[in-house]
Amino acid sequence: MPRDTALGQAALSPTWRGAGFLPRYLGGGILGIVLLAFLPALAGTDWGMVFGILSMIPLWAWALIILGQAAIVLAGSAKWRLLLARLPDNPQRIPFRAATRATTLGALLGQILPIQIVTPLTRAWVARHHDISTGRAVGASLMEQLFEVIALAAAATGSVTLFAFGEIGPASVGAAFGAAVLVLMGVTAGLNTLARFLGGLGLRSGLLGKLSQTAGIAASLPRGATFGLLLLSLFRYGLLVGLNVGIFALLLPGIDLTVLILAYPLIIAVLSFPVFPGGLGVVEATWVGVLATSGIDTATAVEAALALRIILVGGFLFGVPALLWPVMPRGRT
Image 1 (tube, rainbow, N blue to C red):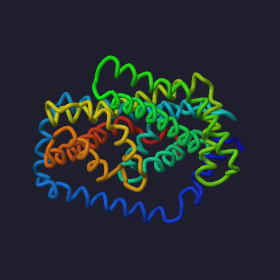
Image 2 (image 1 turned 90 degrees about the horizontal axis):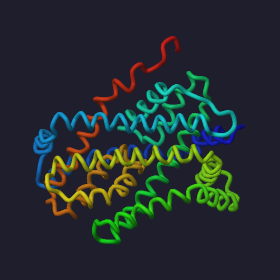
Image 3 (image 1 turned 120 degrees about the horizontal axis):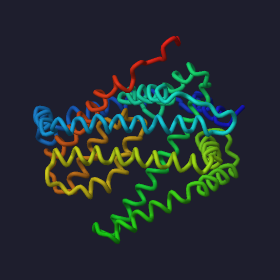
């Protein structure tokens, strides 16, 4: 059995899902909703104020937000399609339009479910109509998530380096960029080292065993494919940062954007925690803390953080019809 197919099937197994995951996820979802509902009252504001500041977003900004959200989906689709074509053992291809529909469905369901789980599943559903096995489709999705983590690690390294300088200038920006580049240059060697280390532990099952398999397959990719995947991952990260920071710049004129850019790796980490659907509640609470370090009062920070959620979700939903239509290719059932 191809290694990536075996990896995908392992990911769908009850062992990978983990006993008790559903109750924990439902509990996290309920906690997130409660946190969102009471966050304005705790900060001395209300939802009326939150919806009121939405008027600060002009039509041209809405257009850019919709395009940005669409570009994020398209980049993710391109990465998954690239992996399907470049993974070892019987490379397969899927039309870009179909890859886009699959990724959009995952992002849509990811608003209320763990996106790390539903996106591989929606991709597998669409891939079946193109004679691509479920295991391979899911395995390629898991591999894509690994490169997202690598891009995040590079961005976080750059942020920490910039923060250590204490100010923004040519020297600090150059050092931050250099640190991020060093992380990216060591990807293949790092993946090989990780695979050998975990393999040496004799772990063939469980989370670490699957991580070892994933790292080993990723390290065997052609350099061109690795470069393309990292470039697309960094492009997506840049779009995410630009959307979030740009919206805050419109909602909170005059705010120092440096802190927001430096803190964004933390936001991604919180957003990726699978117990809270889409980081519901916890992302907003984290943003409030970040904004507070920029001198924004708690009530205003809560209003801006909640408005950010509404704007990002709204911008994505506006673009869904164009990304999703048609749901399935004509003539296929």
